[in-house]
Length: 316
Image (tube, rainbow, N blue to C red; front, side, top):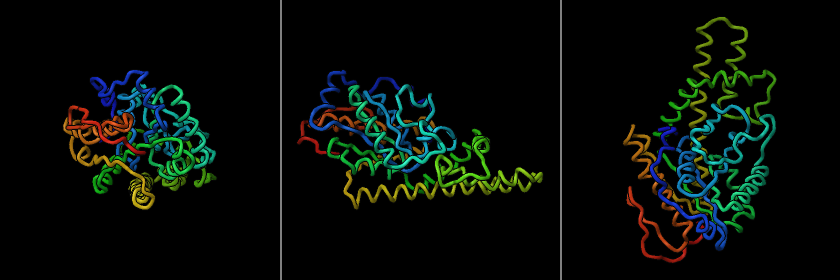
């Protein structure tokens, strides 16, 4: 399963709130923010776009590598086509040589949230950098906003297989050439965008490439570098999952888990149907309930209905 342009080809949005209705919802009690979390490769960006095409919303990127300009393939930035016209904030805007801290993210994300709410839209924060999200939410942010946390989850064996295939596709799209253009033998891999997985792993290959004409040796070194990229990406996914579980279990964050495993195990139309049934549709129903506050939206895998009023929803 991968993000594709087909995700833009929806029939009609499942939720169509009039502008004045969404404004009333967003400005009742605390203002509301949706946060989409998950390990790398689980489909967070896809879900954020699905939600933003069903609700009046804008997306704020919280991935600490995607915030930098450049290396679009390496950092797996969502493309213009995949954005489906949804406005994205903090995506490819920071100087790649600078260090972008959690404090910097907190300041810029808070500003973006305010500007989105002023336009009577719903802010959707999405990304795999849970330390950034934690730094934002654990500030005064939580006292000002109600947060609905959606967690897109995929079983680790399935996800490891997917990220391995994804690295192969990134190589096919030109990842090695993209990193080569940035290569500097004196570079500091602890700063800026060069910390991104895929950059330090290729360092040895570029050094050997510059003086070796042995095609077999170069091919072997490149293959080893790609294997390290796959391994480090899988390790990142494990660390991200551990952090999410810590936020849920130790810090008490109420995370709404959306299991996307079945989506990755199917192909073609069956995968698309599984995405709608288990991730996009359920996620949209949760957001609708969160926005409406007093009414629970029931999702049955194709149609959405509103059940009888329940107690007012608390902070998600």
